[in-house]
Length: 289
Image (cartoon, rainbow, N blue to C red; front, top):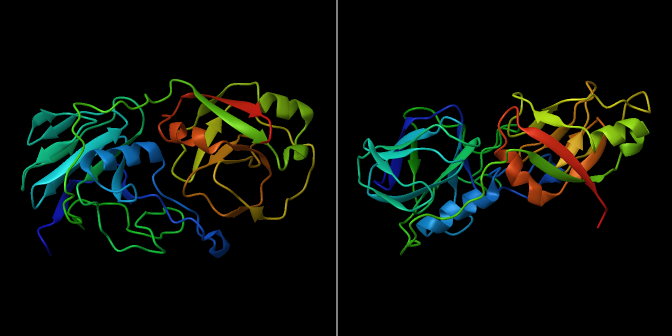
């Protein structure tokens, strides 16, 4: 293998390869996938001089540790965390030069949930349906990283952004999700719809890349029985039999048989990627555009 590669010293709780995803395959039962916090992934790519569609690493809470076989430029962003190179502190949110054989340690997030690591040249694992993203639901793309995994890298970019630190939004203390009601709000009582858009929920520990699950008031159905399976979109808020809303994220299924009470605006979903369990959630009803 070329020396344009890095090895995984510590994979962390869940570290995956992600890019901008594989849109356009819902008719095949394949969701878009891709980085949950897309703006954070785009920023770290920009910091190291990569194109916006280059593949990065998405870590979950506990970070990861990497050893490049060649000198590389890296940037760490998304959820703030300590960054070290061979044990010495290095900046978060800025380009960092890592010598060949040195260990880049991306620590546990101090705020938020998902940290992004871009390496100059990008991670160039084999694409599937035009994307290098890991899809946890379908199993497409590379498997989540394990200790000892070796990841090939693309050619070093000509240059990178010269900044001390790049501003990034803080993870949410309260997650406010704007929703357009429908298409199945009529499957719920009027009281349930009011509760959905006025009562407080919390992010459940059972949340993952497939969906942000909530804890809070159960929504009462107005219609009994089963709903025929129908297409699901990113941001759909599906209500399973326990009555607690689930917001579909990047690895969501493309069809589902539970009623969708509303759909979250796409601009609000990156914040959902950084909402740790217990974060308050409010659903704010907005008019259809």
